[in-house]
Image (cartoon, rainbow, N blue to C red; front, side, top):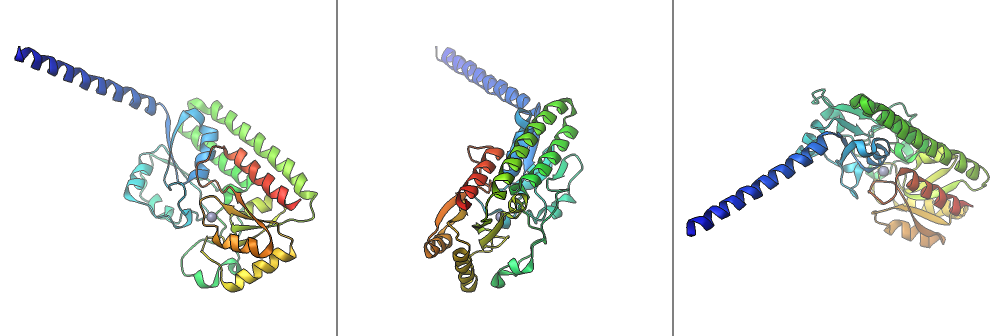
Length: 305
Ligand SMILES: [Zn+2]
C-alpha cells in the first residue's frame, strides 16, 4: 500500500516536470521567431515598436524614470546587448558609455546609431551652467528624438536595421515606416502652420530638451536647467529667467514627467505662470510616439496662442 502511494507520487511528480518542460520549450520557440532588439532608453523603444510591431522582442537598458544623461552601464546590460540581434542607441553623445563597448562587439549584433544622418544642433558654451561644467559631455544637443524631423531620421535608420536582420518581413517594416512617416509629416504641416500664425514663439521648460522640437516649428526655448540636466540654476540665471518670463509674457513653465518641479514651481509663482507637464518620452506611457508628440505640440500651442 505504502509503495503504491509512493509510486503514485513519483508518477505525478514526473508528469509535473514534463509539464514544465513542454511549457518552457513552447515559449522559447515563440520568442526565437522574433528579432531581439535592445534599445538604450524608452524613446527608441517607442520608435522601434512603431516599425517592428509584433515581429520584435524589445528590452530597454536605462530604466524608466532614471536620469538618462548620468546613466552608467552594468555587466548584465552589456551581456543583454551582446545577445541581441539589433542594438539601438540614440547617439550624439546621449549615451557617453557607448563608444567603449562598441569595440568589444563581435559583429553578430547589428548596431544602430539612431541619430546618424540627422542634422545636429551644436551646444553653445554659454548655455552651460558656470558652476557645473566639470563633467564631460558632447558638443551636440542629444535630444534628437524630441524633434519630428530628427525622429523621422531615427525611424528610418531603425527600419533599415530591421530589414537587414529580417529581410523576409521587409514589406511589413516598410509599411509601418510609411505609416509613421505619414503621421509625422501630418504633425509637421499642421503645427508649422499653427505656430506660423502666432506672434509669440518663446516657451520655458525645466530642462533644455526641446532644441530640435523648436527648430522644426520655428520656436524658441529658455530653460531652468541646461541641455545636460545639470541641476539647479545659479541665482543669476534664475533672475535672468524671471526677467525673460515677464518680458515674453510666459504663461506656462513646462516640466518633464518624473522630475522634481521645485525650481520650476518657484519660477512659475514668481511670474504668475502655471506649471504644465510636457513629454520627453523617457518613461513608457500609454501613448505611442506620434500621440505623445501631438500632445506636446498642442499644449505648447495652447499656451502661446
Ligand atoms: Zn535630457
